[in-house]
Structures are given as C-alpha cells and as structure tokens.
Length: 343
Image (cartoon, rainbow, N blue to C red; front, top):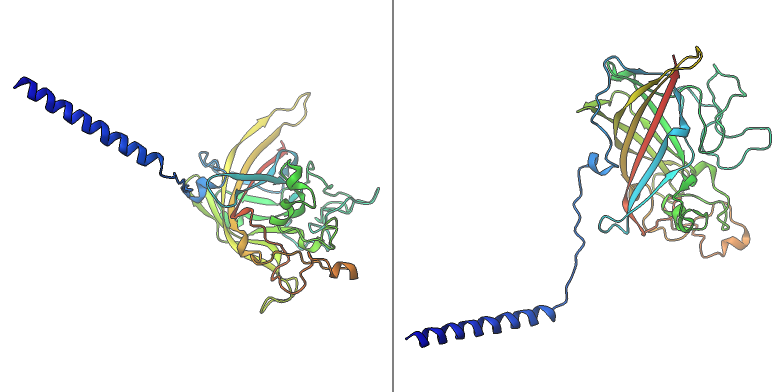
C-alpha cells in the first residue's frame, strides 16, 4: 500500500515537471512586446512641479518699486521626445523680459535678434518715459531692468499685471546638435528664417508673447491660476480668413506660485535688499500654433536661386513655422523669476 502511494506521488511530480518545462519552452519562443505606458499627471504636477507650499504673505504687494533680477531668473521648456514614454527634451531661452502696461514705442521691445551697433544700443530699450532714453535693457541673458513690469497684489487680484515675451531663436539646450541655426531645435520652436542659409531670423516672427487677461486671477490652494493670451508663430497668406502675418494667439491657463522672500542687510550703513521669487507654469500644443503638414521651410524673401530650393515651400504651409515630428505635441513652459528692491 505504501509503495502504491509513493508511486502515485512520483507520477504527480513527473507530470508537474513536464507541464512546467512545456510552459517555459512556450514562453521562451514567444516574442516579448513592450508597449509605452506612461501616466499623464495633472497639469500642476506635470509642469516642472511648481512649488505651491508657501502662501503669499498677507498684504504682500509686488510693484514697480521692485527690479527684475534677470541674471537670477530663467525661462525653461520641456517636451517629450517623439511623444513616447517619459523621455524628455529640455532647454531654456536666453532672451526674455517683462513688458510695461503702456504703449511700447515701435521696435523697442522684442522682435529683434542680433547685436547692436557699437555705442548705439538697439535691443530692448526701456520705453518707460520716467527713465532716460539712454537707459535700456541690454541684449543677452544676464541683464537687469529698472522696474519690474509684473505686478501682484495679494489682497486685490484685479490689480495684477503680467505681460512678457521670449525671443524664440534664443533657444539654448547646451547641445550643438539641437541649438545651432541649421539644426532641429529651431524647427520645433518655430523660428522663421529670411533665406535658405538659415542664418538671418525674421524679427517679426521671433517674439512669443504671454499676456494675462485682467479679471481672471483666481486663488488655488497656496497658488494662483490666471488665463493668459499666448501668441506664438504667425499665419501664412493661404490660411482661410487670415491675413498674411496675423499672429496665432490662443488662451492658456497659467499656474503662478510664490517661492518666498529674503532680506539681506546692507553693510556700512547701506540699504539692505529684499528679494522674492515667483514661478509661472503652463503648457500648450504646438499643433495649435503650427501647421503639422508643413514639412518644408517657407522663405519670406527668397532669391531667384532660393525659389528653386527644395526647402522653400511658398504655397503649401498654413503657418510660418515648420513642423518637427521629433518632439511631442505638448510643450511645457516654466518661468522662474526673482525680484528685488533696496529698503
């Protein structure tokens, strides 16, 4: 009887071993497929994780008594590579500024990319009539303007003002394969070239604007949301109902957070410095501002030889920008700003 039980157990073990080996062999001969699977987080988590832990102090007011410390500020972007997984391309813009809330004189702010003539500053004048005409915002990434044209009032959000720009062609990722004028980085940022050499930037297409809509500021937790008009790229002459060069403007929701403040005492009887920081984050779809079928470059002022260039698409594009499929449709922007004043 004992012998029969042992034989029965051996039979079960042999059967289990055979079944396991057959299953393993079947699994080994089956191709493994890995499907991209990433979780799309909420916007506030996905846009560079802005800090919303700090509440704005009671009665805090940021006005034009503060200056903008541009050398300690930055505007960053990120987007998925080929829109798969969580592989990100990142970078920043070298030229950006706030804009006053009164009419800006022609050619004073934005829309220009190039070095000024010796002794004659041409870029980014401070157009505020309260300041001398010779006082300007110099070109380059490390400048500091006189007043900060971003205003924030914690107790009266109707007084908030926000308007700023970046020069699109000042894209910088520290990767020469993307940053140089003939490389792909300028394509997916929508830089418009004047000719096929891709060395001269069209100044009227180089400025991307972000302007807060008055009356849309709302508190959300310790942070704030505000509806802004985002202007990026322009329509081409063959877009129905649009004039050649009309700016492409769409509404976006911007998340604004307060990042704290610090007072640094002066020395030798000098005034101290109060500094504070804010972060603004938003995202937009490139397809809302660019023609996804535009695979060739539109040249604004081609020569006779350039008209035969395969890169010159004169009638097919609906926008001035040339679409690049190597970057995901969603572009995420974050601006980190530091402001200061003596007191």
